[in-house]
Structures are given as C-alpha cells and as structure tokens.
Image (cartoon, rainbow, N blue to C red; front, side, top):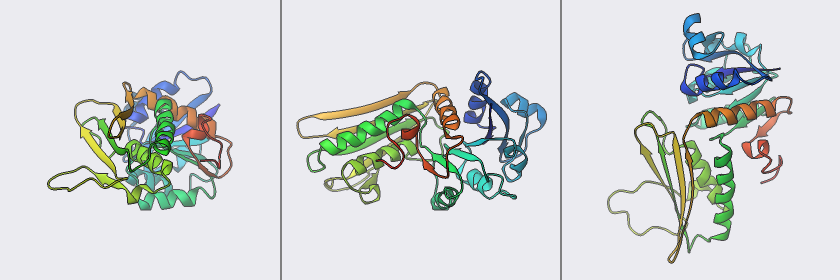
Amino acid sequence: MIGIAVNGAAGRMGRTIAAIARDLPDVRIVGGSDRERLDDEAAAAAGFPRIVASADAASVVAEADVVLDFSSPAGLLALLDAPGAPLAGKALVVGTTGLGEAQLERLRAAERTMAVLVAANFSIGVNLLLALAEQAARALPAPAYDVEIVEAHHRRKADAPSGTALALGRAVAAGRNASLESLRRDGRSGQTGERPAGEIGFHALRGGEVVGEHRVLFLGARERLELAHVATDRALFAEGALVAARWIVGKGPGAYGMAEVLGLTAKGEG
C-alpha cells in the first residue's frame, strides 16, 4: 500500500485526487496540507483524514511514501522549506505551474537527495502531444513554418501562458535545436512589424469553465498543420498524477518526467 500526501489538498485538484484514490486498492491518502489548516469536518469533506498548514506538513508527510504538490509556487516553497525537512527520503510529484527561479532552484537541490517528478500536465494525451510537437518541429523548418501556440482555460487560472503551453513551446524549440527563451513571443498588440522567422507565439484565453485546451499551429505558405488536445474533465489530470505517484515510489534520487512514466523515453534520453 502506497501512502500519499497532497500539498494543496483543499484545492480542486487535491479534492479530485482524494476522490479517485478512494477507489484504488494500492494507495492510501494519509493526509494533506494547504495554506491554512482545515478543521476535521472541512478536511473530511475534501476527502482527507486531516489537512494541516504547509509549514506544518511534517506530521502528514511522515506517513507518506510520496507527496503530490498541486498548490502554488509559494505553497511549494513552504513545503520544500518546512521545518524538519519532512521530504527527506520521500518522492515528490509536482503539478504546480507558474514556477519561478526560486522554486526551480529548490527543486534542483531536492533532486540530489530524492526522486522528483515535475510535469506541466499529467494527461497521457498531452504528453503524446509534446512528443508529436517536437517531431513536427524537427520535420518542418523554421524559415518555412511559423509556430503559434494557443491555449484556453477557466477564468480562475492564475498563470499565463499555461505550463503546458510553455512545455509545448520547449518541445518545438528542442525539435529545432534552439532554446524557447530566444524565440518566445507572448501575444501581439499594436504595430508589431513583420513576424521574425523562428518565433514561437503564445496566446492565452481565459473564461468560463474551460478545463484545458491546447493547440500547436505550424503555419506554412501552402499548408497548415494543427496538433490539438482538449481536456473535458479535470479528473484526467488527477488520474495521471496518481499513475506518476505509484511509478516514482522506490526510484533513486534525480529528476524524472511523464515521458518516462508513460514509456515514451528512458531516463537520460531526449
């Protein structure tokens, strides 16, 4: 039986993970953490035996084999810096997006002593889309095919472009042996001038209850290739996160990704 703790337990993803985990015979939700502690009744309503504050996560994490983080950049830092180093000897799966250099630096440090898996998206379809985007970019050269990435999410999403959109941009850049930072362009407005060759454009739509939509457009002079993924239920992401959680338990220290979980590549490849 694998013990799982969730940081960001009171959020929508945390609640969905708890609901799905109830029906899995090989996992047990030992508890959760969030920005603030929830009383027992509120924690039970969210599907957890208890939910403590992230800074006090040690007591919950101690019972877990793996911690799933679906909190916020600040919530992830609070977990990583919690007193008593509660993550020592555990595995960590991170689904929080919008991470800055402070969080990434702390995750790189954690990878030296524990197994860490960071994914912008836990959907099997999206991870196949990432592989296809890189393959298409390799076959369709930048001078002849412009790339635009369009994503849509619900009105409450805090970061833009989405982590998945940025991952798609990195896949396209990798397929063209370039770095995303040198090619990224977020939206356009006013007198923008001619589009530079190789630029990777991002456009974020926010509204309603859109779970998640991503499209990668390769725009040539005589043809257009579109790769798309549409999520219709956020349970999709929770299911993938639980697959990752079960897979990573027992792995040695280091950085892992969903491509390895899904068998799309072996560690050290790509």
